[in-house]
Image (cartoon, rainbow, N blue to C red):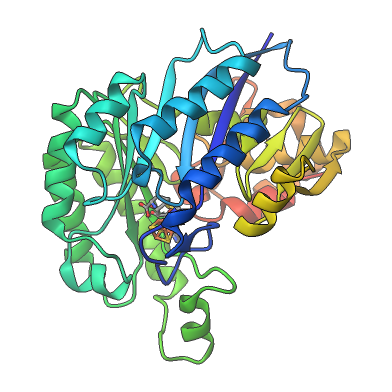
Length: 369
Ligand SMILES: C[S@@+](CC[C@H](N)C(=O)[O-])C[C@H]1O[C@@H](n2cnc3c(N)ncnc32)[C@H](O)[C@@H]1O
Ligand code: SF4
């Protein structure tokens, strides 16, 4: 039996953040009930043979899933139950935006079996929240966090973003220490990436925004890992840190190239061989489902070589690294020469050192056959 995950994509947001390329749209909340109906139908018409898989994680992501009402979550869960064995689910996450997840709703979510909350804090600096066009205030973070704990969430992740134009190390240092005082169980610390098509992308292109240079980002990356590790959050993946035993099992499915099924617009799925994804368009998605058509807009069968390369690429981003047999000996030797002090080989595993993690993507490409 192979471990697997279930992903549900909720595309609604109160506003669209300037840096975000995830499929999400603002001002469409009136479509939520129609969307839930379609989502339920999509799940119920799923014909994937998952008899060899044990689903142990559910992740409701977005978008802003905390905008949903508890009865929506109940409908989604009921639909999942008609199709999949949910008895082995150990981690059930929902994403929430600070200030957009009132206490009663969180309480109801927890009562429905959701046991992990992932909150997009991003930064505690008001001017950087404004730069990122975030809708929430610093106080909203404290309030939502407190409400989540009170509602019973014992596993809370907080997302932070660094390498933001205008951010000093001092500001970032303060963001990390403020978050650590809140005592979340897991921290994701992402560098701000410029994604094609976003407002940030256009501003960087027309030079009205200048991004921090790579040397600074690399230096902050190393210091961030040291800082979080010395406060009890060990980095188990390039951007992810947790208290012992509280790694995100759902994301580990992606990084370990294990199967996952996704539902909702833009959701991706992988069955161990084939990968497919739904269209990134709410109305297109609704139209297809309502006509009992497939919302899938992309599909590919991965060759064994592609799967091996994915294992290398994703595996190197984790501290556990990869089994040495995944990499050809001559490529390993060449890469060790090209990237001194970056690659470690020990106990049959190839791992990147801290310094190597800064160049993980480039080293990964060099190690792929
Ligand atoms: C897509 S959001 C969904 C959760 C929720 N709506 C929120 O904004 O917190 C998940 C996380 O992705 C991260 N993210 C999105 N776009 C990013 C970017 N361009 N660079 C770095 N992090 C990004 C943010 O940290 C965010 O919390
Ligand atoms: S970052 Fe979160 S809140 Fe902002 S647009 Fe993306 S999904 Fe929506």
